[in-house]
Image 1: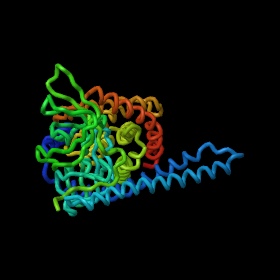
Image 2 (image 1 turned 90 degrees about the vertical axis):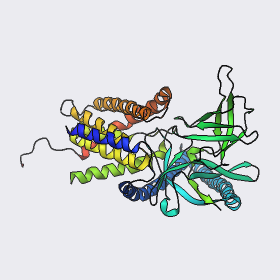
Image 3 (image 1 turned 180 degrees about the vertical axis):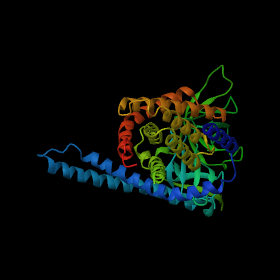
Length: 270
Length: 165
């Protein structure tokens, strides 16, 4: 009896929330407010723990006679790792600085504080929300270098729901995500979607589109969800089948989605 | 008091699973400790505790991460309730029972989830889902199931016979 009651209530809730909402309820907002600061702490702690494990792995296989040598080696590896870290970060920071200097958008900088745990979707929680001026459907980007010295906004995803100081973001590699694109070189347009495996594939509106591997893609702004001109990635593979009316492509995204940590949310135009 | 413990476990598991465990993912798949905890409690404490845990943990995950509220709550609720039904019918100290239920529940969860996503209009290739999500997660969950079960058993063992009332 209770089981049937609970089931019916939950199915009603699913039905009510299935079509997307503009605002989340007060209850959700409060729960998010309590949980997200704790998540932020643990997410950062997780990064530190993994970093420590990695340097311990480097040391492994210690034997008595070459202990001293191994230790020195480990120290050098550790130092090397730190330097590499600094160099890598310098690159990243330089990109960020260039982007902020040259961009025509206004940004809110934000940090990822949690990832969805059900292995189905690529959804994340970020630590900024309505209080910082974030709205539903805002684009989430990171700086990407496409040619030498040209830094542009690379698309990561979009905001789907906003709390007071936290928001849900759905990434473009998520299976439920659709995005319209255009090729920079020829201006041919089409639609891509994410998938469960984190791959992006799609097709062109024009089956005669003249595209080759390595062509660069931007968002086209069709559909009004994503703003125009955000960098997506390059074409990895063009499939030409004589008996199919559409031309399928596989996209290599510019951003490594496993290593996204700091992101920018576009809130408006300067 | 017991309710307080349960709530603490729900929140702690959720936070750890969405943050620290994400750093230990293999090929982007993380173990589903939620399902293991629900099954451990359902087996040890019966359908009431199992279904209560299921609904709370599912709702929390839905509220924080997904746009549609209730899908995870409903599936976890069913898992907690159904596995709670076999409480007192199986020999609970046998680890293979736990492994068996974890395997069945993991597959059950993903099939049901697939069904919901299908009716909510999301096209996901069934074979890819099976290969990637179920296979990896199944192995991961089975490895973690016995230690978590033993831990829960130790922490929440209620005395079978009590003469003090």
